[in-house]
Image (cartoon, helix red, strand yellow):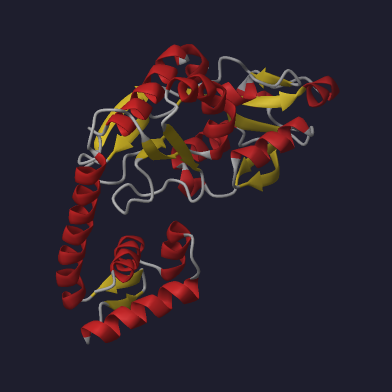
Length: 295
């Protein structure tokens, strides 16, 4: 049986939708649909049925899922067994990390690590984010929200602080709000998709509820650009907002400490020297930047 079809099946079963699975696999909706049709034809049965909530596994689909997941586990164990030869940290390690985390926080630390580990190649997987460890889209995942995937080795490595920021140009045109009643007349930049981080989205909307929403963005990089352009006030992680001298923090005491930052890895791979070295590096970097990350 074609293992590639099984990987696509696992992604569709988890996502419940061809489009979502395609984004995770860096593929397209037609390709995913075509591969599922091929798999169903090979097996001679329907694996999914459509419901109002999306694609739902049939009884045969559920039975096949158990075997497909066992195949995925066996593939991971086989890779670990082959890769574990020797104790030198070497090889490619895929780290799934948000684009902002990669560019604004981790990148400045990487040179020293790579100088010390010349046999390790770090592959930063920023899209799609978060990548799945169980589907081997990544070896390690850095997340700022709930774990999501079961049966992973998880470790809380930091707390993340978020505050409101505005450009100095914006602040020069009107007094920045300090109290609840002072947000009226201000413009805010909101989150286009609160589902990606509902806690932060709700907090931002609640604090700035008396302001006018000028625009909404789906990425922190776009929110950062909008704030620096003087469009309005927006919520940014403090390690990003504080890095730009043309931004000022609004109501400095209005600080949200988000859920813990998690580092996740597959239990069958966590003992490999290269993966352990990268995990230890990320943990040490987070500890060293504890105050920076908390804001």
